[in-house]
Length: 375
Image 1: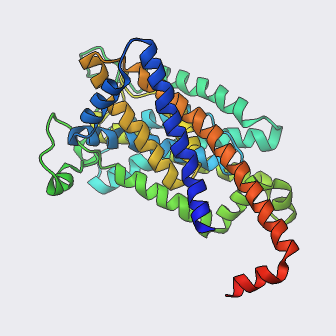
Image 2: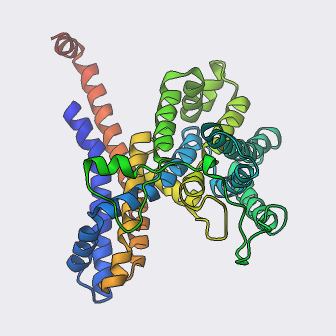
Image 3: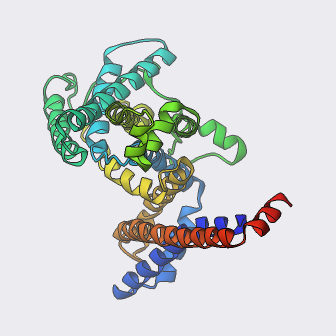
C-alpha cells in the first residue's frame, strides 16, 4: 500500500515534467532547432556554481510567493493580490529602512515588520470586504492590485523619492549598512569553491526556509491551522463544529498578506538596498503557478520554486549560443503548470477509485481484513 501511495505521489510531477519537455521539444523542432542541443546547453550552463547561486536567489522570492498564495488556497481563498501586496510592501519597507539608523538586527527586523504589516493590511481589506459585503476575493484583490501599483507610482515620484539622486532614475534613498542582509557566499565557498562573476547568494533564503517551516507547523500543529484546513475542506462541517468562518477568512487573508510582504525583501535587503524602477515585478502571479505545481505543500513549493528558478537562470544561455530563444522557458513553465494541474487531477481520481475499491473489498471480507491488520 505504501509503495502504491509513493508511486501515485511521484507519478503526477514526473508525468507533468516529461510531458512539458516533450511538448517544448516539439516547439523547438517547429522553429528549426535541435531540442537535444538546446537542452544540453541549458544543462551544461545550469550545473555551474554561479548558476546555482542565481537559482537560489530567484527561487527565494518565488518560494515566499508560493507560500503566500498557498495559505489562501488551503482555505479555498484565491489571493490574486499578492502582486500588489508585495510591491507596495517593498516600497514602504525600503523607505522606512532608509529613514532610520538602528543596530543591525533591530534595523532588519523593523524593515521586515513594516513589510509584513503593509502586506497584511492590504490583504486584510479583501478579507473584510468578503465577510462584510460578500465581495469575492478574486475581484477585490485584482482591483487592489491596480490600486497598489498606482500608489507605488505616485509615492515613488513624490514623497518617497530620493531628492539627492542625480541619475534621474526614480528610487528611494539607500538603506544604511545596518539594514542590509548579509550574503551566504562564505558559507557556500567553505564546501565548494570561490563564487565568481560577482554573484552573491542572498542570506534572506534562510528567512524563506523559516517561513516554510512555520507554515507547516501552523497548519499541522495549531488549532488555527486546523480550523483553516477544515474550513477549506468543508466549510459547513467546520462551522457546525464551532469554527467561525468570517474570522477564519480574515485571519487567513491577513496571514497570506504578511508572507506576501516579505517577497520583495530578498532583493531590497540583499542586492539593491533600495526600491527603484528596476525592482522585479510579476513574482506574485508566478507564485500562483509555484503553489499549484507544489500542491500547496511547503516541500512541494520549494521544489517548484527551485525548478522555476533554475529555468530562469539557465535560459540566458539559449540567447547567447543561438540554439533557441529564451522565451522557450516561458513556454516550458506554462506547460508545466497546465500539465501538473491535469496530472494531479488524474492521479486523484485514480486514488479515489483505488480507495473505493479497497473499501468495497473490506466490506465484503471484514474478517480477513481484520486478520491482516492484526498480523
